[in-house]
Length: 260
Image 1 (cartoon, helix red, strand yellow):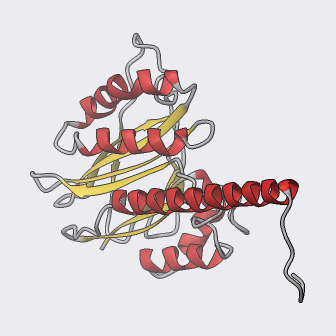
Image 2: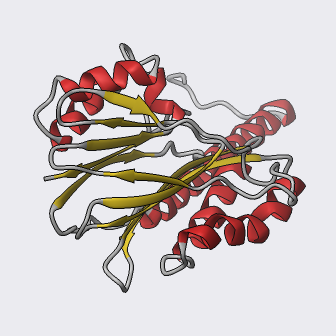
């Protein structure tokens, strides 16, 4: 800038051209991030009402695409299906593959537990292998009239049950992640009974990167110190630094299922 007009030479015009292309590229990437954000927000399921139970959730995915899988919905027979997982791959492939896993989960809402993970695995293993990706998944089917739940855990291992009396146990995964379990070895189903006041908490690894929550035992202690699932979610949300889940490469997913 100057008080007198000047003429641009060839070098100056070339520099302006470079700046223009840089600005155009940045604007394009910002638009792509915005579209990705809208697509991710569209994948988040709506809140559901479950007979005799409360389901409180926190799901935040970062703008670059994320890799967390989160779904909860009521099947036609009234059973509650809850799925939490994670796809780890290079770059934006995590988000793309997580969306594929999510779609496969939704397509199996009415599928029996013993067939759900196996059928999903058969559908998405080729995609995971092509992207050199690893996927983990916790999938639960709850009968809300009895509190009986069947579940499968494909290498996820981030679920803890806190009883009404304060005792708790981690639901350890006995199986390998999606696509890594040999076909000759069947998946190991699990069973649990939710009694009044019991809370089941399932999360992804992002929760255990927050201050004070480095282990599932820390999460279980937080659950014991709160009155209900909504309070657990708000306590965890308060631990998230500003920007986590939006603009920062960290996904945070937390599901708290309480039998009232």
